[in-house]
Image (tube, rainbow, N blue to C red; front, side):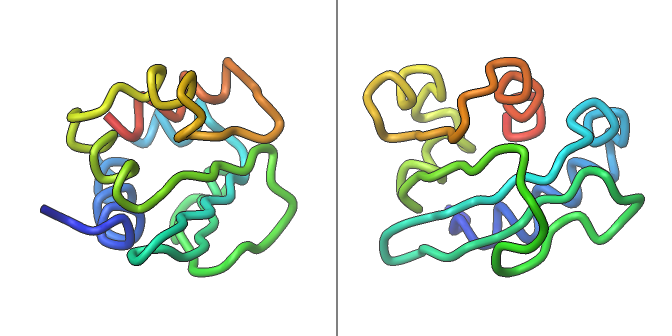
Length: 109
């Protein structure tokens, strides 16, 4: 089972390379605040042509996502439904931009 760090730093860039249209659709800077043992902060910048993921929070985000490392891994491996996680307060979006969250969902699933 991959860690949140591996999913964000390795899997997400692979998925964007495979489907560059998703990055163009998102076209925003998103911060990930992952809490817990596997935690950390990352920036996903879909406004760039490459090097989408960087460590730490850089730039001005259109949205910040806060989730525990454990829940993030479960969401990415489809063991936890992202909408359910959001309703239960396990997955937080700030500000809540439903359109952007849906586009991001395509990238994470």
